[in-house]
Length: 157
Ligand code: FES
Image (cartoon, rainbow, N blue to C red; front, top):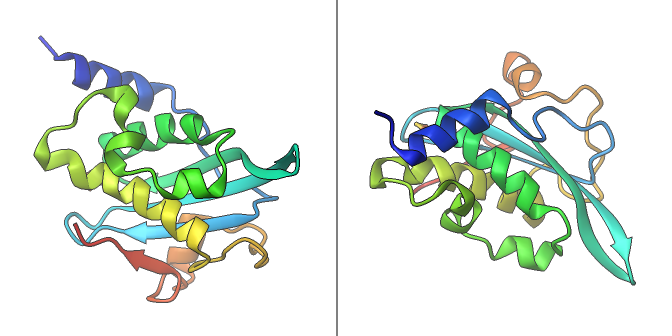
């Protein structure tokens, strides 16, 4: 019988939230994991609320394992309504919290999501204010050879 964590991961993968690129993103971050070679990209759109900039939407694309997809799914839900400062302080563990505690071997999967979020918020890769190229997809960038050192941040765990 599957444990609860595996079940929650499978449910999130079956019905991922916020999957896909965003045409009108304000920020974009892409990371690759040296542990497994998986990649993840996150798009973020902000809006003003009472004079404060908060996250309106976050979406993702992943060439990653099921755990990375599940964490990105729950994390992008959780990010809605947070300020950039609040989001920046969130750890992989916090982003994965709705799924339950991850086993040590899967922690880097959550760190991949954290890395993409931080990359988007830090302005290192297609940051807020920088024009996100139209049709910017993870697969498209990899095929075009643009997923190079400048665009892809490697997350060391
Ligand atoms: Fe690579 Fe999960 S095994 S992100």
